[in-house]
Amino acid sequence: MQSADCTDPNTGQKLQQVLLKSKSGLVSYDVIWVTQEEARNILQQIKEIKAAKIKRMARPEVMIQKETVIRHERPIAAPTVTRSAPPARSDLPGPVINIIDPPIANTRSITNVITPTDADKRTVVGKINAPAGLISLTINGKSHKVDEHGIFKAEVPVTRSKTPVTIVAVDNQGKRDTVEFRLLPEPLQEQPETGAGVDNDPSVFGNYHALIIANARYEKLDDLSTPKNDADAIADILKQRYGFTVTRLYDATRYEILSALNKTRRELTEKDNLLLYYAGHGEYDKTYNRGHWLPVDAETDSTAN
Image (cartoon, rainbow, N blue to C red; front, side, top):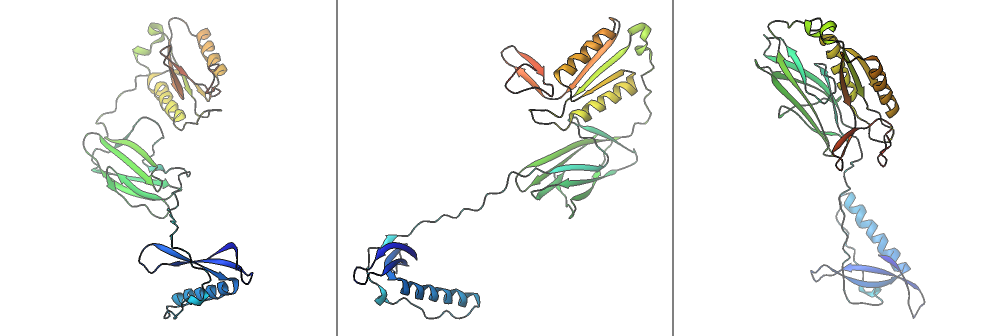
C-alpha cells in the first residue's frame, strides 16, 4: 500500500494505491484504488494477520472485498527488490600473533630456538588478538583451538635437525598473520667466542665499527614494525661475538644519517673497518638503476630527502 496523488472524481476523496498479488500464478500485481477509510481498514486487517502469526493462532478469514475497488487497472510487473547481505567489515585491524613461550622477537628473519637434545617435543604458547573475530589457527598445517582470551597451547615434535614451525591465524575479514621460527637441538659443545681472536687484533686489521640504522616511525610513509628488532639483533651479535664498536641510530632523518656518516668518516682511519646496516623503507629508481634509503622525513612526491 502506498500513497498516491489521486482523488475520486465523484466524491473528491483522496485515494491510496494498493497492490494485490495476482491469482494467475504469475509474479505480477493488480492495482486498486481505495479511500483513506478503506485503507485504514485494510491496515487493521494486516495487523490482525501479523498478530495471529506471532501467537501461532489460526489465520482469520480476512479478504478485501471487491466492492472497495473503485478503478481497476491492468496488472503490472511486481517491483524487484534485491536484498544483499551486509558487506563484511574490512576496516578492522587484522589478527596479530604474539608468541609467549618460547620468547621470539618480531623480526623479518626466522628465529632459531634452541631445545635440549633429549627433548622430543617443545611446548609453544601464544596469544592472538583478532578484533574481527578468528576463523582458524593452524600450526604446521594442523588446526588448534584458542580459548576465550585468545590463548593457545601446542606441543610441537622436535627432530634431531632443525624443525620449522609456522603459525597462521586468519580472521573473519580474510586477513591473516604468520609467525615462523625453527626449533634447533642444543649443540653438543659450546662454540668459543671470536671477539678476542687474532682476527680482531687492532694492530693487524684495525678496529671494527658498525653503524646500525633502524627507521620505523615515518612522518609521511607507513610505519614499520620490525626494523628496531632487526637492528638490535644484528648489533648484539656484532658487539658480543665479534667485538665491534656499535653506533645505533633509530628513526633518523636525512640530516641525522648524513651527520652520523660524516662523524664516522672523520674518526675512522684507512686501517679501520666499517659495517653499515640499514633497516627501513627504500626506493628503487628504475631510470638510474639505483636504490635509495628513505629517512623518516622522506616524502612520496619529492626526492629532496
